[in-house]
Amino acid sequence: MSAIYPEELGFYFNQEKFEEIYFQTVKGYQDVMPLNQFKKEAAAFHEGTGDFKLFKYNQLEPGIKRYSYVDNQTMRMITAAFSNERDIVGLQFGMLDKFNTDHIYTEKEYVLPFRTEWFVLWGGSNNFWNYHYPHESQRYAYDFIIKKDGRPYEGSGEHLNDHYGYGEAVTAPGTGTVVKVYDGVADNAPFSMNMEQPEGNAIVIKHGEAEYSLLAHLKEDSILVSEGSEVRPGDLIAACGNSGASDTPHLHFHVMDAPIPEKGLSIRIRFAELNFEPKQGDTLRGE
Image (cartoon, rainbow, N blue to C red; front, side, top):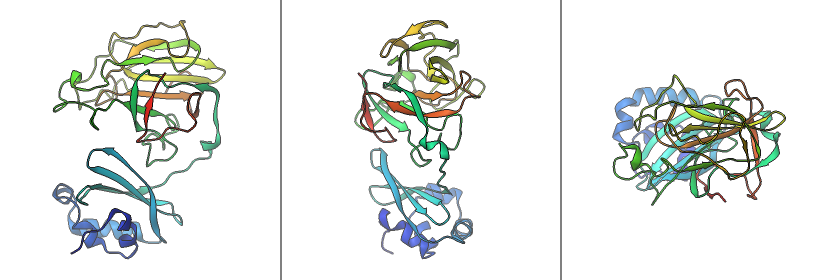
């Protein structure tokens, strides 16, 4: 059986060649998804669709590329991860969500909340690029990490200091007043999370009427501002950590219309120093 090229998976799915797709998946996938179950789920997902075509693709880690295929008739989406050897290491059925809030941008312009080179792990205006997107409180949020040679940590990553982003400077994304500080939350060990305090250590800054930024998952005892502090773009305010609902050190950043993260609605961000809107897979350098 010849291998399916990533660009061809939508065609194979359109032709209901589910077994050929399945047998290109890795053993780990097949261990949790028996063939009969896969065929049943694939057939149900295929029913009523028109034509799945390649939508987006990107690379998040060495040797692995992610592809999405969308049927514009139903907006159903297949997401597949391929290795360099064309093994399918992950496969998911879902929907391509789109919301009418996409046309609403912040009134203020913001700068990147760091001074060095960071990688966009999650971010963008669809749920292929951005897992936050279906959730209105975080829809246009970004998760940033630091990579070296394509990896976010050295060795096994079992220690926080193995992660390149851990302890790196976090800066104010714009002029404003600090209105809320969450502090005193211990950093999680790598690959574990604290769902009881999802923001972890975090800072909320008011930048204008109904525009507040949230910088979350900060390092314990690293916050340098307090409620009432005035900040300007690029001011050092904290360090990147792994607190709250974070399993590896990263910086979460979004702008919302209220000071309480759970109650605010996320707003699409206008960036001052960029001539494009960042998305998953981009590498950015702050000023």
